[in-house]
Image (cartoon, rainbow, N blue to C red; front, side, top):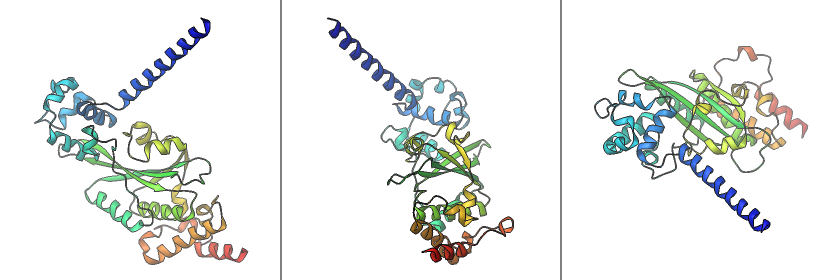
Length: 292
């Protein structure tokens, strides 16, 4: 009987754990359009009672007091307006997709990245960002890095908001990928869109890089992780190739930067003065090839 009792206790424990996990998931990922609509605003620091400020003609304070009341008036126009306001997938609000954000991949396309940045800035928005990179070596084919751009803007009503842009597909321990990453960071800094760096866990990368998790303040504000300086990748060749796994990776990274800058000077850092004594990228490449 004691064995049966222990088995039953274990089964009961498993059931409770599953119930706890399900409850946690349901809280973090609402299962109704009204719930997701509210959650989207709350993720941007907007209390549900403040939502009518953004849709004064369509929503009232009484309506947003409960998901049930909101469900009665939540139509396609409101869903599309909210998705455009925050740059999210309307199908996510509709509970028809798990993809919250459309991600973009600018690997090998730094000039397209620059055009993307210029388009955002041309609307009068302000832009900053962070490169999240996984700690430790990542020699697998998993991406270990993504860029989060944070666009700050004002609505027609004069209300301040932020919109998030996820740029994925980067592999920091792959020479060519790191080189193109450095070119994108340099291009952004030249536009005064300053991108900082944080080292985080691989789990963090997997959770947020794909655009399937609604971004919270731990990602958009506090920027968890150890700080590093991605702008240095484009200023100092020694930093660009540091800890790359092979000589070939290092040579490739240097060649990519040299060739891309030769094609378009907008990928050159605007300010070199404080790095006058740093070895040039061509000299660093020549030094590597001489050692072979």
